[in-house]
Length: 429
RNA sequence: GGAGGAAUGGCCGAGCGGUUUAAGGCGCACGCCUGGAAAGCGUGUUGGGGUUCACGCCCCUCGAGGGUUCGAAUCCCUCUUCCUCCGCCA
Image (cartoon, rainbow, N blue to C red; front, side, top):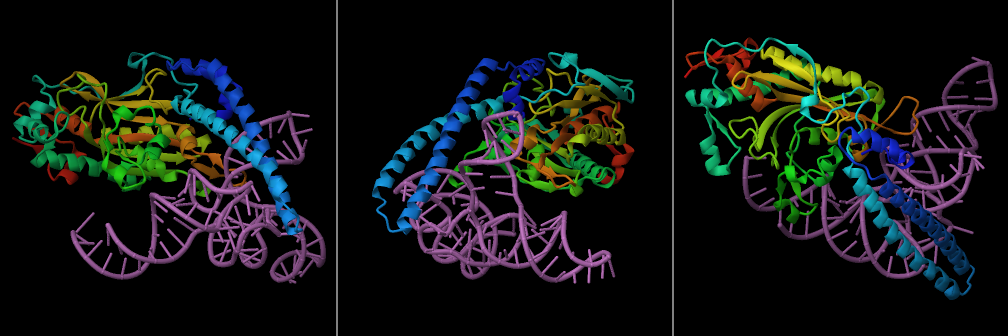
């Protein structure tokens, strides 16, 4: 959410900034609603003040033993007006809130302007694209040869976009997640967390998936009968990890907070029909090791650079060629002010494909969650900055390791760093 | 799943439908006192919002949301969380 004061005081400047992301802000409608809000709020609060003072006077009159019946009638009338006014105010505020929740974050000044992924800017590359002396196979074929990836069995019980892994491939999947967790906790200073995979709607509203992107989420109806509203399966551990500071005032001495969690992620993938239908690239369920940082505003861009470096470290250890992209204004996610994507080389596609995305959300999520800190001077609480990044997607890392390590005989050579986690350096048919 | 109990400021802890503008204590900050400190005394100390050039004024906030009432921390309803016991379970 954007700063409501800024939105109120300078809507045109915000509209201009948002146009670079393809968002159209109706300034006239906003200003009209805001004027109405102000009129109703001032009127309502005046009525409340009158009711308070007059009710108190009744109490004092009663204490003196006077007849209070005539006073009561007069104040009752205020009550009627107040009720009507408050109801109207509530409606206007709900509409303003709905609009505020719909508006994406403002892009940071350094973000390249552009319409879509074609306008993203390459920042750097690491390693050279893997060159194979034979026709590269994709992970589906490699997995079949090794009898370790089975889409049909998963489809039989769960439908399309699910997978089961077997034997060494399942073990490789586990080894990858373990390596990532160890790297981030031991080398990068993140605290490991175990988190819920089912969350309420307000948690998703805090990180920005709701109310706008409900179609991308799996909702659990059973929760509704349990009280406390329905649950959603988490689309990323960003949601539970970032919500750890919801409605908190964090002591500045505890900052930065750095969390890492390995979780499954569940995505309905609405609107992506026909994209990446083959293989494990785009699934309804996948594992991811997620990084979240909660920092002071002055340090959030420094933290973003560090975080993309943390994700890169994983690919370097896995000896996977990659490139780092700065996303343009039109390709960034809803809550991001600036985003780096990490794209890994896939020989079967002869292309770089996204395997991590690191974003600085500045105060966008913090404002929705009321996540704040108090500085050393002990003044008013200020909004934190939140960052999240994949460190990295486990399923896609598995694909990349299989495809980049494939050999002519159908076996797969594994990166050295994985040996102690996997218990070997190759997988053979 | 069943039966009870609880939730009040940074913390502890009072609170009869109206002198509560949430007592009192602890902690913290500032001031007085002191050579300096402690003790003592005094003042301040939740968070959010509105309005104003500003000083300021006002509204909301006692787990959450409704309701009753001229007036609710206090009465009623629903929910959440925690505690005790029983059952079930990993």
